[in-house]
Image 1: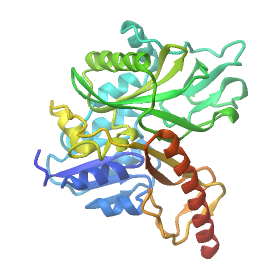
Image 2 (image 1 turned 180 degrees about the vertical axis):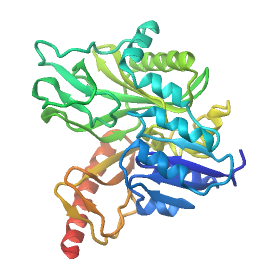
Image 3 (image 1 turned 90 degrees about the vertical axis):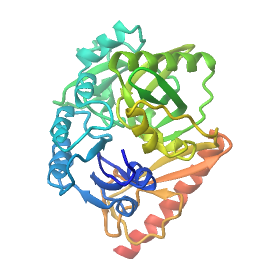
Image 4 (image 1 turned 45 degrees about the vertical axis):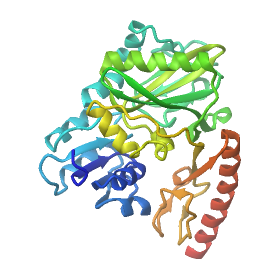
Length: 369
């Protein structure tokens, strides 16, 4: 693929993928739910959807005036309705795993038997509510980013399709890797954090690279990624989320699309994350050009319903909402980034920056009132 070609990127938030592709010389059409300031700057055309679901994303893509045979990349947002992606195949080549692969993974009744066949361990699951729900989680099928996870014993009535899984109170991490259909190249292992698991808030809150997990855990995670790649012929950038129970690693999920953690390796990859993703889809696995420092990313969620005014956003802030954007309590406002010599240093920097952003947004809210 020539770097001057058009590229469609679609998902809930495409900011990072659009930036990486733009740096590589692509003319990006970005379709997502936010159309942040930095997304608009990176895209040739940036479109914010009205409908907040997979159907809305696909409808907007099909309505764009694009050149014939435009390749496309999808991010998060299609977990609940992966079949919608099949409609985009008329536009051009899918750079990533096929919609059919995503459809297989979206069904617990097919995903967990696959793990059994591959001898991949995972926390015990049940498709019926446990008689003693304490120590179990309720997970909505097709959810992402921890949004559909609740404690089973405190869960309110919900008609969405779900299953139950044992809670393992160990460290949660992810492995980010490139795949060419049979082989993998490991980019790194990352430490994942949720907003407040103790209070039942499992929303994704942040991630740090260079997680010191130990050789035994690392080998198990790499073995899982290799087995899944060989069985599913995975291509491009992928990720697996795992939890540690003593010396054992248990798989939580496979993200068979460009994972958010790919951004942690943008500077360490010779031509960036999207270029490495596309190269892997074409059969070439990129290696990290340098070890690099620890990288971190954290989400700042609105602490109340508020309108964001004009903010002088720091360079380390991304996903910047345009002035006048109204954010409901609990909605993501922006992302924060930090680099350091260790994940501990990065975590400290991100906490300091969270306080700075909280003050800046609060001040802009007062001025906008």
